[in-house]
Image (cartoon, rainbow, N blue to C red; front, side):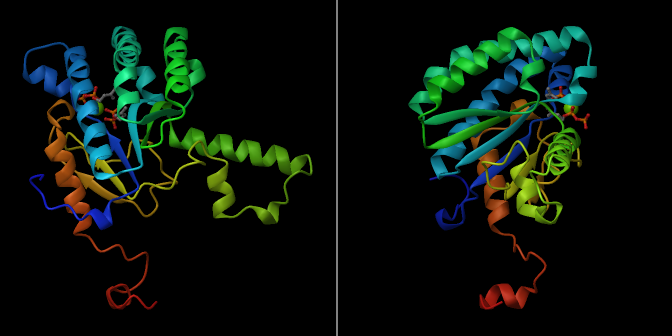
Length: 249
Ligand code: IPE
Ligand code: IPE
Ligand code: MG
C-alpha cells in the first residue's frame, strides 16, 4: 500500500502536529504569507485522511497559538477568515470520513464568526466515531496549566478538593485534553526544533518527530513516513531495553 511498511499493530492512538512553515513556503514562491496558510489547508485534509486510513483515533492540530495574537492584524484576520471558510467547506467531508470535531484553547475569544462556525460543525459531527480532530485555537500550554491550577486552588479553598488528592491523573483531568489520551507522537514541520508552548504536560513521554518539510508540502506520504519512523523507536518509559524486549518488567 503506502510507501512505508506501516505496522497496523503499532498505530499511535493520538498524533499531534505543529503545522509550521506556511509563511516561508509562500515567501519562497514570492507570495504573501496568507497564500501559505491557504495551501496549508490541503495538508490538513491529507493528514486527517491519512490518520483516519490507518486508524489513528485522535489528531490534534496546532492551528493558532495564544502567541500568534501578536502577529500583524491583517494576517490574524485572514487566518480567522480561512478558518471559517474551511470549516464551512469541509463539514460534509468530515461527516463522510466519520470525523468528530473538537477544540482546545480559548475559543471564546475568537471572532464571533469563528465561534459560530465551530459550534455548528461540532454539533453536526458530534456523533462521528472514527476519528476526533482536535483543533488547538488560541491555545497555550502554560495558560492551560495555569487555569487548571486556578480551578484546583478554588476547589481546595472551598473545601471541595483535598490537596492530597492532587496527583498526575487529577491534574490531567483539569486540562482541556481531559477526554483524550496523551499523544504518542508529535510531528513538527519546517525545521524548527521546539515545542512553542504546545501540550507541554501531555508531551511528557511523547516521541518527537521533526522534519524540514514546510507544512503546505506535508502530504499523506510524509505523514506515513512519520508514523513509520515512530514505529521503529523503542519506547522505554524509564525502563531498560532488556526489560522492554522481555516484556517482563
Ligand atoms: C504556521 O506557519 C501557521 C501558523 C502559525 C498559524 P507560520 O505562519 O508560522 O509560517 P512560518 O513559520 O512563518 O514560515
Ligand atoms: C507554532 O508556530 C504555532 C502554530 C503552528 C499554530 P509558530 O510559527 O507560531 O511558532 P514559533 O513562534 O516560531 O515558535
Ligand atoms: Mg512559524
